Length: 184
Length: 123
Image 1 (cartoon, rainbow over the protein chains, first blue to last red):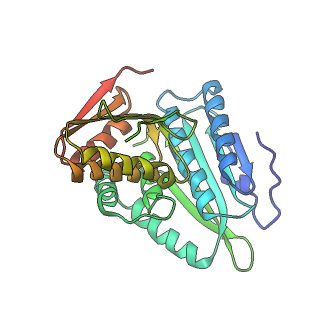
Image 2: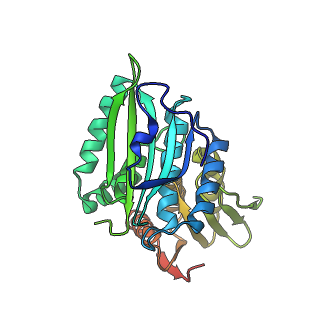
Image 3: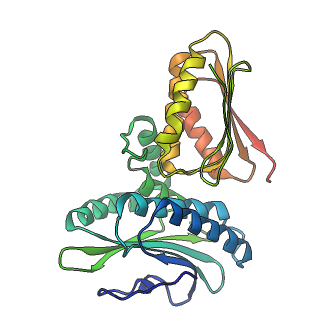
């Protein structure tokens, strides 16, 4: 487990991890390309040693981790950014989560986007993804709003978020993706 | 036109774009942080090849890719589609990988070129 100094603000990052889960990998700090490579290599190595339900595939876990880590690289230049992967004691659930400080305006956009996605069916999500893929705009790094959509789809809607108090002008955006052995 | 041969890395796919064979192959994983930087020269190369006479075969055999790569792949396939009708796409996926199958089906639904979805054994 990576070294972590949490709790410097009002919230302990480890509060995101359920009590019946063990943390497999965690990292707190600014996320850069080299950090991403290090964490993803670690996840691959750890996966082969973990007793996880066979329905939780490395590819799914890896895809979710890639999107979340790259979200932090692109959108959070903050040393308080946090990433973790945990698994339940029975191996039937994995959680991949991140937290990073955001402004009130960013929080507003994130919550409205996530609320729409969470209330969209799997078949509608696929249609939405096709539409974004075919006609959507893109950002300078090549994305363009597909990340959260894809995360919602991969997790079968098991995507949760909350905003916790952080500093006077920022909130802590906490996002968790659950991968279940029986996702539906 | 020179061939483009690039070895795969932990974040970028192996590339074999061959002028005389008129084939393009992408394999491995595609998860670069900035996929536009990686794919822009490939798209330009594909445009050049597809605007010359002859059949073009595209082979995509990716293990997985991030969402920004998915848009760049779409750009690549759309550029090929816009440049020639004389091309086909082979999309390879491991037989138990429903996500990669579904991704192939999504591209097939959008791109108006012959498109084969080919299951391979699990590695």
